[in-house]
Image 1: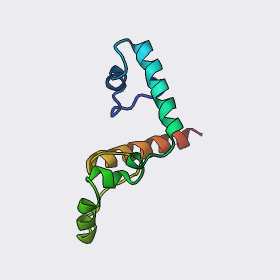
Image 2: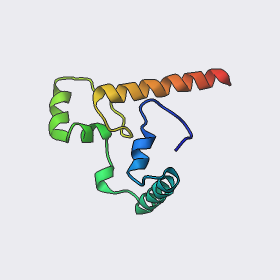
Image 3: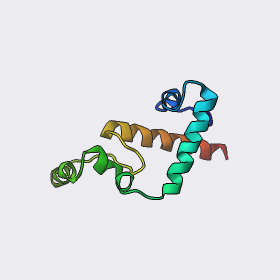
Image 4: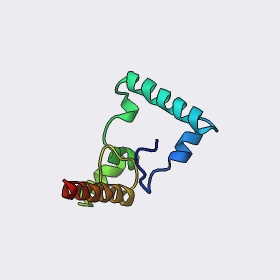
Length: 101
């Protein structure tokens, strides 16, 4: 929404799903988020992102049994490399921020 600009974010694409004019799309997106927040927790959006990314426990359990390390964060949906890159980027930003204080 213009507050921060990370290379992995595609704000224009997301807004394009809500309208062709940026101002109207931004308003529609805000309304959508507001409505979703009022829904509370819904089962299909709750739980570990890794499990959803791997398409369920049927994929996750064999990986655990083989001691395969997979980066995960329940807030991030995506494959191992994507999740690792997002976590690394966030950690680097936090270090830079802390050095500024």
